[in-house]
Length: 432
Image (cartoon, rainbow, N blue to C red; front, top):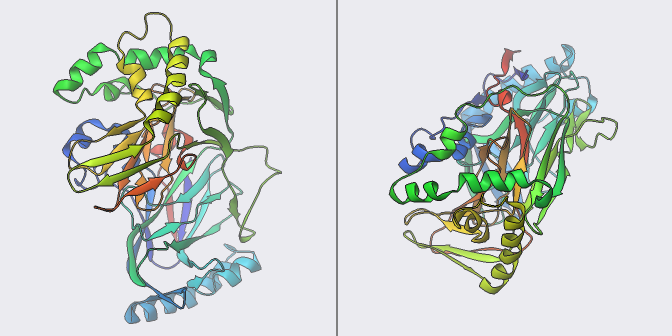
């Protein structure tokens, strides 16, 4: 189960698969130890633009244009292909026909709408999600997220690109511009206090035991890699039900995925008539902070008194839930209560640990999709949350010598359950 892709513009945009190490560009330590980040790098398929698109801002409005030679060739292809989509039954909506008339157009919100030349059709039991390229992306623009349901109909793949406020007045777009991946609908998540899920506290304490921290003094432990080595990709056929266990009072909410782009037209729509949904978790920042990277060291500033007060409630909830004797090392609780964990010197990264455990059914992992901000990305990862229940947010700072500021309550991370068998699913390509 996956999706079909129809290419009508002869590979203007291709679907490509990333290597987990981003072609060897990740640090050696990450390549050896950080399985969730490696799987996040390789997640889904990248929509890769083979010709540079130039964006120019004038009088506050953005325009896009191809290079002259590319523009003539693409215009010829576009004039030949788009009318055929209606004639041959791939597009039946007049709204889509009008929307596809220009290959590139301005949007009412001030961004750029790009027709990729691709149409997609999810298999029954799969929804498609289109979003940022993440982890290795052009940070000068954002991609407006869209979800495409399994209506047994072709849907044109049109990207809305929104340049960031600080983007220069002229810049180019090329290479990986977005990610498309399949999800399974009918996913529910229940919120429970940790006291109702003591086995999650026990599993966390057993993972972060004395041997873990003693081994970490010398080298990477590889414990997570070993813990998930024997996992299976099979999942139950019925609706999946997972849970999020708050440790104390955590800033987390359950939100359904949407809105949807369908064959009826390019305007996103809600689907109240479909009983299926995909529940996601949105984690928000617990304590306001600033972060500064000077090329060698990363410095974090925050209200330590406020963090201590909130962390004490987390520690009490964790120890109350963990069975007696399970937490033999203080590091298990410290993993949570420290909240911030910087990377080694020279890396513009640090962790933030949400105060909750996420558990999915057997055969399900969770996509950790970061919510970007001014001057930083929260990186994409994939965690086997049927085995390991923490969902850290990994920050990457773009700028050296300039502080980022993240207020309390700012969304940091969206967690989306996904069957592991879909992580390896391949699309089927057709040409017009």
